[in-house]
Amino acid sequence: MIEATIRKPPDPGGRPEHPRAGVYTARADRFRQAIDNEEKRYAWISHLRLVVFLAAAGAFVSGFLALENPPLAVALSGLGVLVLGGFVVLVVFHNRINERLERAKKLRWLNETA
Image (cartoon, rainbow, N blue to C red; front, side, top):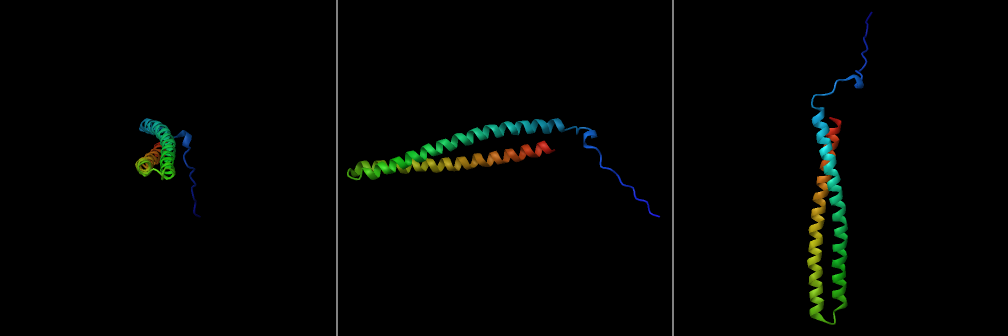
């Protein structure tokens, strides 16, 4: 007759703490703080993007409405182009912040589960 021994998995509560657990906890806390900082920066850039876009739209509309005065219309349209360029720079910067935020979230998760 064949006998089989069934072993129960070890109790996770009774498992001794890993010697580097403090390092992982400190890293997770550091990444948690980085997430908070990046989320604040992300929100701030979101609002700034909206303001810059509205300023560019206002400059273009003002330039269109000032067609009777060609130098003013050109100046306002040029201003709109410059402000729109600033908007594009903010979009790129916003994307980089989002990438850093996602990286910090992944690293926090990794250190919390380690």
